[in-house]
Amino acid sequence: MAAVVEGPGLHTGPLSLRRPLPDDVVVGGDFLWTRYRRYPVFSAPWLAGRTLLFGSLILIFAILTLLGTLMAPVTLRGALGASAYTFVGFLMMTTAGPGLATLTRHLGLAARVERVLVVLALCAGIAVAYGVDSWASAHINAFLVSEMGYGLIDRDSLEQQTAQPVIQQLGFVVKLMTALLIYGLLGGGAAVRAYFSEQRRLAESRHRRELAAAQSRQHESELRLGALQAQVEPHFLFNTLASVRALVRQDAGRAEAMLDALVDYLRSTIPRLRDDQARLASTLGEQLDLCARYLEVMRLRTGDRLQYTVEADDALRGLAYPPLLLITLVENAVKHGIEPRPGAGRIAIRAWTADDALRVRVVDDGAGLSPGVGGGMGLANVREQLAVRFGPRASLRLSGAPGGGAQAEIRTPLDARP
Image (cartoon, rainbow, N blue to C red):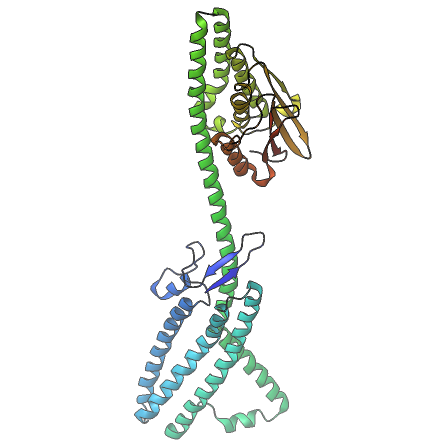
């Protein structure tokens, strides 16, 4: 059986009434006699443990009462009967309300309905406990009168004292308040407070777990980001050095220019690989410059077949921006757009703001979108980074470009930091 737990602004879900509560929700369940508190209030295990605890204490009290009664001139049968009535009366006083509340909670009702019915069940339990206790007290009083000559209550004296209506009304009020206090506390009043606070503690616990899970996902994503960057840099470096080697004998000037462009690119990337904090944070300007240096190397490698432009206002360059996202889009544009197509090609990078979002678009006039493009690990990593850092407020969109080619656009919120 499960109950629904609600918390304002938090995820709601089923709570198992058979399983222990999370450790950060449990209050006072460290001792053997309080281990029942490790289970949800008004669950079957909680009721069983609480009944065992209170029943043991009441049994000890009943035995002591029996031994004390046997010291008086009474029959064994009468003393045993009085002790049994004492045990039953006190046991019902402490378990009737919690028992009815437990039955109510195991019905699996909606949270708001359950809370109302739990309170009503405890009130009904108080009434039941009062009736059983009155019945037990009457039998105990009859035993005392028959075997010891006096009872717990001297009814004749009480009737004389309460002959006046005012005294009768006052006595009724005092008796009612005393009964509510005693039956309320012993019959589950403290458990009601624990029941409602349990709802709050469960919601807080769930929120902490969700936050920890989100932080764990972000940490794992950042680790994959660092690993990806560590893999991309040698791959790009080896390919460029191979191109330089091929150009050394054919065109020394172009080989030298490619080496200069490569050094310029590596100067902006290698320090970031050594600094964990810098590797995970960046600005839009840094990422645009990185893309421009990469495209310059690729321009020289393709023999000026590739042309490129980078357009962004100076005010936007200082905005925080996740690393590796743009360079991944640019690499895709080169690999899937420019390289497969013969002849000249062009890549344009543009950044601007619209609708409270920072939009950065990479457009190429190459081969265009083909089946399978957009599902690779590079773009999957971009989508994951956006989801972890910004949630649903960020997006990556791929589409065909007007006039041929493809375009990829990243949207991130202006008011959020990656």
